[in-house]
Image: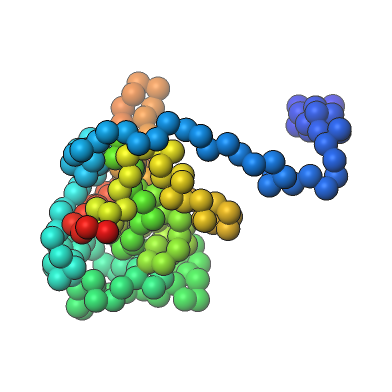
Length: 214
């Protein structure tokens, strides 16, 4: 018996008394985590933690500043793919945009140099942006293949910690949407702890933080 067969046999044995009509939603998952941390400078903490991950952050005070800010963040990277239903008024003029409708093949996506998306939520204590691949975010591959990711998020979307983010994402979780949790640019380390960026995703993450009051 191979190792694979042995593992599968153990899994089947462990599940043999589970009713055939039981599903992943048959039992509620408790969400009684600690909540309501006192983080008076939550947005500043988010910025600090994002920058700790060697990502870039630019803060803007109004939507009118977004086109110029996004253009500067792109730094001439071209062509660009944009998350589906991204607000066109936020985009700079003259971009070489590659459409993902119909879906780009891996071969067609490979030469795309940058992606522009929104986000679903930001987590202050971990410096994480979360994509649920809804409006303005595009499918998951778009945030993983291009070398530069420019992500626009509102200050009102920032929460204190991961449990709070999971609460915000409940509708997406219930809809079985994929979630991409991004803490800085893609990075890994070898056995000698030498950090290498851009191995499994964007080499550069630029977060554009739009100040608002919700």
